[in-house]
Image (tube, rainbow, N blue to C red; front, side, top):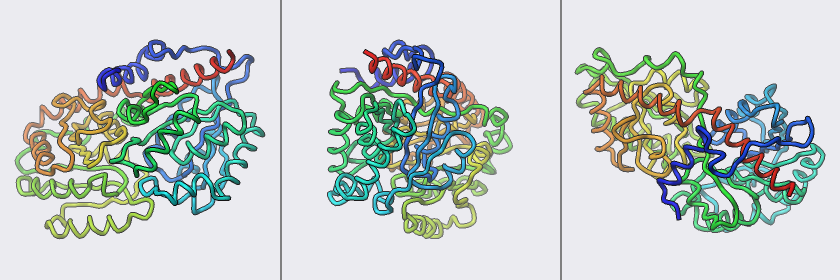
Length: 430
């Protein structure tokens, strides 16, 4: 059984240089004729979560001479707006009771809803019909709900299905019943499984019944070409006056650890009184109560004057470029860590919690620091070390950028996904 480190190396190689061939994924013509392969990429939501941003980036960089992506969403929204004019887009509305079921609240009743209620069955049959009408060659699902509903529809339409798993299938991340269900279905519905990290892939427990591979969610480096020196620690910005900006980026929810970030900020504020802290992102899926708790904690810690809640922002890359240090604070193992990749692409030193797929991205002590999950004191100490050593921080940022260039570009990720398509098509022709 390969170790996690071996799996990580395989994942990095696949999304980098020649790893597709080493993993048994060989670039072949995707179709018998001149027409590209028609791939239906299905996500249940149009909200801009990490998986949806990764989908958007992937679609932009798929080789149109080889693949014609058709994106199907179960609702309208920001992702649909970004995709219009870029790709053929179909919005097939899903019943609200199914659409709004949260992955972190799936219980017996919710699982029953996904599998058995009339609205779900109608959706599956409608999606299967659309798959045939659009002459789809392959179905690629991008979320847990899409895996189930789109996977069943693809099988019903007689098309091969690829699951793209962007969530750790583990009991510390999902309800136990959901874990059992997803692991069982992963060995039955898809013909291939892509995961966003080796850590995520290991939680699916495919047991050799279905092939799987880890392909990281790469970043478009062109969005950061001119950004490497903006906000990086310097003698002026990272000196004893503490005039720096430390930020955390992502959906506002308890497991993302913004409360831990605030506790670390309180410790840092005592040493760096002019430091500013940004919490970039908004709540999704009815999590406003957590936002209220964060704002109350900010006031309780005496940070109201130095902490900014930006809310949802469409210019996240620009905000990251202006940070001095990027912090990742998840209290549960992150499946991948897209924001960390963005920060490193911008040349930022990163302080991140040690869990899930994060160690596959951050090289501790080289491109940033890894700290225990939920440990505000260790987080503050690591950030303080960077602020006190601006030249070392700058070097970490430079090495982080180099690591992204070598291992985590969206171009290499797209080529690796195309290699999976090719493998699946080739197997179907045998």
